[in-house]
Image 1 (cartoon, rainbow, N blue to C red):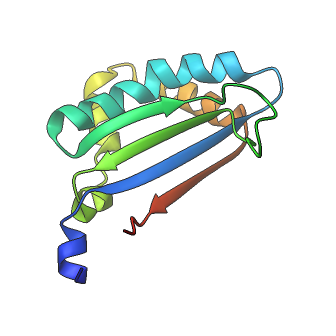
Image 2: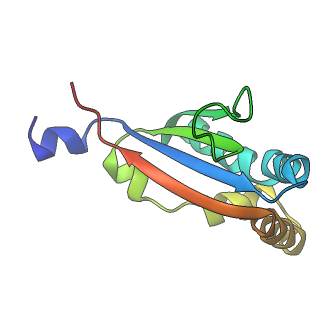
Image 3: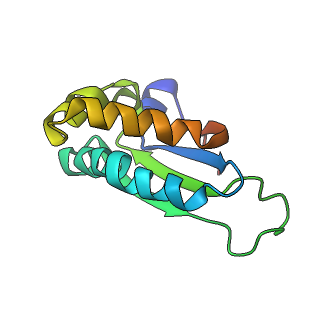
Length: 122
């Protein structure tokens, strides 16, 4: 597949979050209240095709060194490179100061966060 063909294909990104001990529930609550609505709005707009969330079924399963994982499928590479989160958040959350503070707190609760852009191979 050529670079041009690959650029027009959906792009999958996995985002991993490892919460500080004892803060998993607070992180999930803030994620669901402040970040998930922004992701959902991007699915509605067509920028993203799908957003899914996962948690390990059992702690100690293999190398599950994360507590929450999201799988996001972007429409294409151009959609991945767009940055519309701030605009969407401003529209969805009129109390910008509260939203910024809660997002700051959400990231304070993490020991680690990393993203993996997947390149599908047949």
